[in-house]
Amino acid sequence: MLEDWRKLFSFFPKQERFRIFLLLISTTISGLFQAIGVASILPFIAVVADPDLVTENPYLNGAYEYFGSDGVSEFLVLLGLFAMLVLIATNLLVAVNAWLTFRVCHIGEHDLAKRLLDKYLKAPYQLLLQRNSAELLKMLVSEIDRVVIGTLMAGIGVFADVVATVFIVALLLWIQPWVTIATLAVLAVAYATIYIFVIPKVVRLGSEFAPLNTEIYKNAQEALHASREIRVLGCEDHFVARFSRPLLRLSRNAVKYSTLDIIPAQALELIAFGGLIVAAVFMIGSTGDAGKAIPTLAMFGFAAYRLIPALKDLFDGVQAVRYNMEALEPLWQDFSVAVEDVPSEPVPALELHDTIRFADVSYSYPAGRQEALSGVEFKIRAGTALCLAGSTGAGKSTTIDVLLGLLQPSRGQVLVDGRPITPQNVRAWQRNIGYVPQVVFLFDDTVASNIALGVEPEAIDPTRLERAARIAQIHDFIVDELPLGYQTLVGERGASLSGGQRQRIGIARALYHDAPVLVMDEATNEVDLVTEAKILQGLRELGRRTMLFVSHRSTIAAFSDEIAVLESGRVVARGGFAELSAPGSRYRALLVEPTAETLA
Image (cartoon, rainbow, N blue to C red; front, side):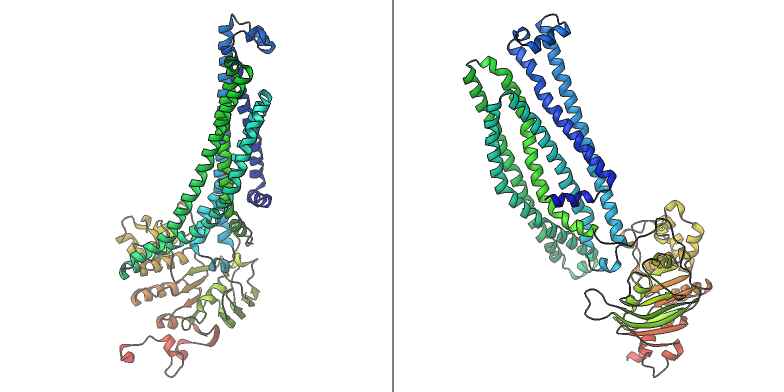
């Protein structure tokens, strides 16, 4: 348990841990004031029950003479005002301490989620390939809330309840030690019994929560992303049931947890008030005078009013901590992932002047049975275009990911003018690259922000924006057909746009920063041939650009200066389009689309 708390506090920077320490100090002071607040009503009730105490009790008599009160009634008013001021100060302190707790924990939750997303985005790319995006989303949204709010804030609440309980019990021990000890003994036995029977079940329910929550996130995300196919196939009921099954199990989990949360609290309340009644009977029986017992009983009653909620919250807090602590270990593992040290300031590009060379590059995916790339060798001369061709699964996209620096070769190197791309200079290399993936992801933002990805709206250069859009053959569509032009929202994943329109926005995105190296992975496969020809003409007019294409289209292959053919992760042929597509060439089928005559 102590190791769990050490891990939890290690999530926070030193300054934040110091704030938590100060919060614990203020919580201790708040607990002390609660005990003082309970004690403050004793003189008032005592004098109400027996006015003669003003002269009989040396402390009350000293206060009476010090304030120079004109009679017992005036002194009683002063005692009442004093008790009221102490209670107001106590409640204000409790409220301020609660606000500080909320602020520290909720702001801490924000900072933790921000740092975890930063971890995910900077983690080795192959690690992200092995994780389900729904699981990562759950960690960012749900599990951080469980750890910070359900564990840290609940733990601070437990500490506050323990402090308040200790001070109030100390006061009761001073007033009526034997009655207090007997009540505490009964409460301790009851608390221990409940803890032994309830907490193991709570821990089990907490361990069941995380996998169920992951499955719910995953099923919901997949169903929403595949809604078009689901509608066409008419299998909505299947996916609703698929989502519903773990959700029902989680709901039952919540029912059990909530029930376990209520029963102990009710039991503790019954025992505590039962103890108060027993204490009243004992004190009246021992003094033989109910009037003399009234002040002490009143204070015990007010103490119970403060103590019982504290005991209830204490047990609830312990339950919450044990239930939510199960989320700590996976979160700790994610925070322990090593990430590359990304400079806070933009780094200068690793400029290309001569060649990009793949030198005996091999790569194996962690779960792969065989190498995705095996001894890949080829060069791209600066200012030329190379087309990677090959059948599905030949290793084209993996080659692209290695060139982009997303994957580190398991053997061999990628050299830029003879300098290897390494984790230390990969950022400098990536600043050269404009990249268009097979599937262009569009954010639920404006067209302008989607093209100038990563640039704040006020910093977008409209001239550069329009230039990139014109080369990508999307400018006319944006200004003529979209209601707000470049400020039109594209919707989630660009749902309101066609596949070809999304691809052209992706091409404009790659061109916006005027990168000297363009990497285009099937970037025009949803664009018609006329538009594609215009895009290629625009790329040619850019001047000296180094371009790497992955494409099955003969137009792209013919546009390129050289073609490299991959099979089973190896480069098996290199040459020009005319050579590799000539009649009789074994690679012609890869480079020339079949016609109606050849298919007949």
